[in-house]
Image (cartoon, rainbow, N blue to C red; front, side, top):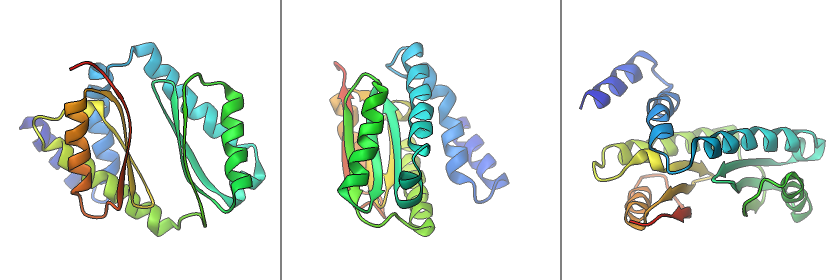
Length: 189
């Protein structure tokens, strides 16, 4: 209850920054409750930056695509849009060459990169999903990472199946969600 009041108070003070506040409020608890070791969490965060840096070195990827990567437990989720398969494949190759260590989940769609308005709406959808998850007492939100790209919600985490099913159900029943894609790794219950 106190946590919710704190979040609501901070949201009121920062009008318009709901997504950033939601992420910040959960981040500290997330590190403690995460199933990954602290070194894996640090490695994943470092890999996020390494991938972003590697992709940014290619002008064609910078200017013609909207591609991002998220690393969870050494596995890479690649999302966004590329106008053709050549640029999509190039982005995947750049990440493969980094040898992060796990699987690469290619969810890059062939198409025109999304607009600023679409990306803003995606941020709002992510905030709504996380907010609904936060209100579900039987779900440990600190074990679920939520990313929205063009209305598609990607759920990542090292989590048991019961928690994963609950997270998927919440996301599927949130306004603005077109599709839910699970990229979970499962633990024993």
